[in-house]
Amino acid sequence: MISKSLIKATFKQNLIVMLIIIAALMLYLPIIVSMYNPDMQDSLNEVLELFPQQFLAALGFTAARHDLLGFVATYFYGFLILLLPMIFTITAANRTIASHVDKGSMAYLLSTPTKRSKIAITQALYLLVSISLIIGLVTVVGICVSQMLYPGELDIMGFIMLNLGALLLHYALTGLSFFASCTFNDSKNSLMLGAGLPVAFLLLQMLSDVGESTEFLKYFTIYTLFDPEKITSGEGYIISFLIMGIIAICLYFAGIMAFKKRDLPL
Image 1 (cartoon, rainbow, N blue to C red):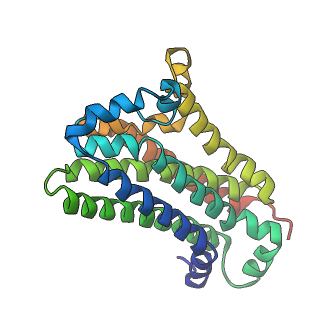
Image 2 (cartoon, helix red, strand yellow):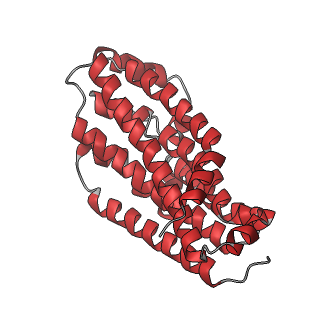
């Protein structure tokens, strides 16, 4: 059902970008966890008040709850977990299909007994596995660092659900980028949709957090479905999880079908 040689080649092709993103996440997460001090939370909030509040709101740095999960959810999952994995998925998704067509290497792949559907499914699986590895590593490291520095203070199940929400969000985003990669014959047009929309969604989300006058923009971005505050409080996130999962499934399926049926300039 999948091409082992192709998926190995794709992992190798994107390994450096993947390692850079993982390194950045592994740098920021322990630092943010180590900054947690419930006795100093009020002082930290007072320091943050010195900065432009609209700027902090755009980055998701609102007043955090006085527990470790709420602190990490605010200062790591409010912005960094949205931006850094997105950079990887945009790059990797474009390289799965569109880049091969653009460079002419798709002709070589299709000259082998490998069917189009097998190529598309293999590349889709790569994207799902790679982003799962990244978020999975964040989950494990976050739990380990928290237990080492603050034994018993992290709500582990809440933290896992927080990462599950982030994973489903990035499944949907990679589905969008994969669909674009399967639809267009060149990287330029693939990136216009596959990178343009996720970046636009993130900007709209940031603007929607600035104030009441721009709050309506949250209805035009998929990032609204990932709400760390609701997840950490355990309220009203199941429907959002289901919607993100459905979006991901539909986009990946549509991408595979589009690649199977369209004409290629080979």
